[in-house]
Image 1 (cartoon, rainbow, N blue to C red):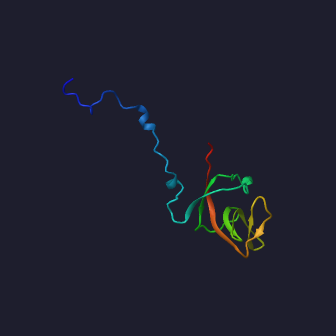
Image 2: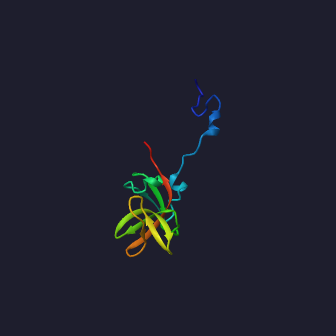
Image 3: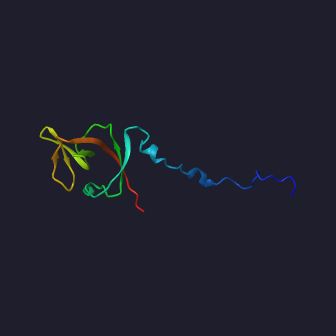
Length: 122
């Protein structure tokens, strides 16, 4: 086979080529390149009733404004809480599933609001 070059092939292009999806870039899809967005892994079952399980990854936004009814990450007396944020009696309240609601006062900081949940079921 003189004159044969390996860069010449025979056959036809695969018809499945039109259906190949690009690789999903989770950092881009979840907008994690912004300086105020962070992935946070959940430890514990405090908000299992809201569908948030131990080992889930939450995408939180530290620049987001607090919103009633949304899940937030709060620092309470130097302890990290994952809680639902409520507004009642003209003040903010934290409601973790396992504990009674607590007004946001004293040594409490609403650090970030949860924007997305990523679950890895293996």
